[in-house]
Length: 100
Image 1: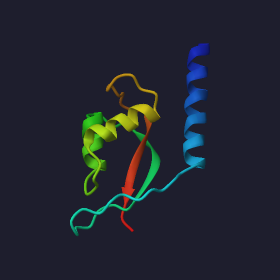
Image 2: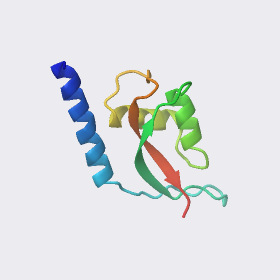
Image 3: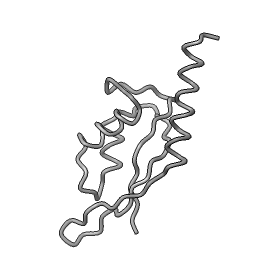
C-alpha cells in the first residue's frame, strides 16, 4: 500500500480522535428573541452525493449568527483543506449547533 495513503489515513484518524476526545461546546448569541442554537459541537460527517461546502454550511448555520463564509472557513481550517472541493464518501469534521 502506498505510504502516502497510509500516512493520510493515520493523520485523519488522529485528527478525528483529537476532535472527538476534545468535543467542546460554545455559546452562540441569541438574535432578537427568536429561538437560536446555543451550543456547538464537532462531528464527523460523511460527504453525500451532491454535497458542497456551501450546502453543508447553509444547513448547519440555520438559526445561528454564523455566516456561511465563516462556517466554510472553519471547516476548511479544521480539515486542512486548501480548496472548496469535497469528495462523496470522504469524512470531514464539521460544526453542528444544538438548542438548549
